[in-house]
Image (cartoon, rainbow, N blue to C red; front, top):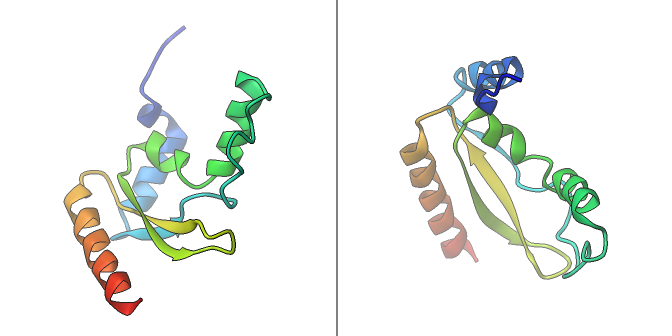
Length: 112
């Protein structure tokens, strides 16, 4: 069995190529609101892993492809919990993402 980095898979490389044509992308962090504490406590490891992967929907592809992302809270949902967005960039754009997140954080702080 040949082991290789996740970023070496063709789909990951295609995603990086697509991302390199963009400055940044703003997308949700999760696919659903946060579950109750201990929601998956009795589901077992595999079922919990699959459920969390579905819930996290928007984060794993960027991570596997090697594209940096930063998540920041932008509003409060009906549950009272923060709802966030992630700002994704092409590889090696960490400083740009942090600068954008800082600017957005200041903007959100001064507007509330």
